[in-house]
Length: 35
Image (cartoon, rainbow, N blue to C red; front, side, top):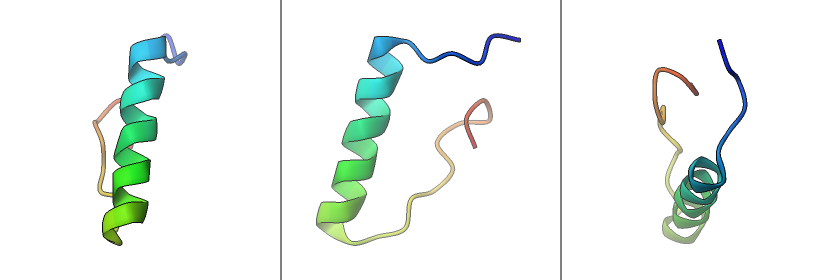
């Protein structure tokens, strides 16, 4: 199983985390592949 992230996945995760910081809410499980 490949456990590396593509550039697009890294950008999506970064945006998800930044939105969680800005909106002050917990970060939920993103996917089953990256819990």
